[in-house]
Length: 481
Image 1 (tube, rainbow, N blue to C red):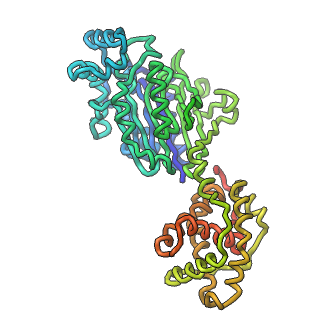
Image 2 (cartoon, rainbow, N blue to C red; image 1 turned 90 degrees about the vertical axis):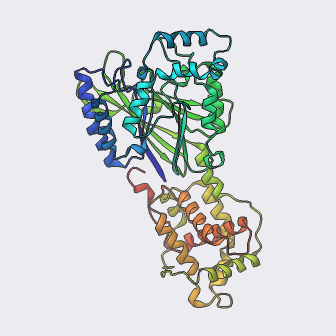
Image 3 (cartoon, rainbow, N blue to C red; image 1 turned 60 degrees about the vertical axis):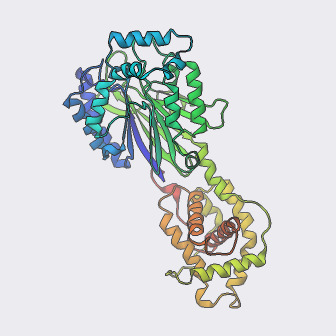
């Protein structure tokens, strides 16, 4: 299962010159081209929609609607946070921010502000909040500041990094109201987050813009709640950083350029593809060519981007596949395994199946190569093959299973293979999916432990790979794997 999305940042819509207007028009067309390659799941907009606190007019909404339409999305799939240009500044707010920053512990003072003082800070983003409600159709949770979106495929933690934004040169001192941020992130289901779901955090500012102690707290929270990717803008120049600190789960920080063209900004945006079944992540930076007026991949962002793409592995997701393939290496009881096969036949008897073809056997090495199977899978296959003789003994005799039921196991596994083989990138993923689906269907009605039931199904699936017409496809020939 895959997730695909875009990050666009720093639109500064009221900033308009010839190059910027042409670039923005071409962006809509280019996004439609990208969509033809594969559908998008969602859009991240990481702040500075407006320019210098200007109004959000109908032109802004029309352009953003154009992006959403080009991606084939609804606004339910759009995630938007404010930037420092989305703030209206006034003297009262400036004086309050100055008093907070001059206190002995600014972070603690911000957390303890009374409602009246908090309202002064929040009102600086009133134009943005009103725009958000008008454009998105729902209210921004301004009292919470930070909030969480959760779905089956991905979660997004939206961080409002601009509460204290007020002046130039504030990078490295910004505060997030960390108590509110913790309340938002702790709503994430930690156990579910360990599963095959992508966990994203977004904010306008890079983590380097946050005050150092709060920055380290944020990294710790990201580790505890399995945040995989953090997206930001603000600096008008793209970059990436793999944050491998003292915690167990490194995350990738991705920074997008801007959607304006001047002497300072790099016009750029990011496309991301993530395979939730193995953690393989592909990040593509697209940059505007001012001279010839077109968008293209940017391969100038470092050696890891020489091909125009950053390849990254979310190890948390990768390890799930290997864990699913692996199990204990204890010898199994062959008599009990025979009983399982017989019981499985009886369980499957009532299901409608089709006739398999046992005659098409090709070399295992070719199967594993074509299906891009990993070393873990091949190693476990070898260990499971020790028990193929038990299966063949039952299949060659009518003493255990009647002749009319002999193909029930093969038919069940082949059915599952045909259902899933086009949905996944390699043999490891397909194998895990087949085993899990059959296990979910039958474990509650078979009198064996969960661990043994799953191990027996793995052995039967490997036997079927050896005996039947599955794993004959060539995943290496599929375009855009």
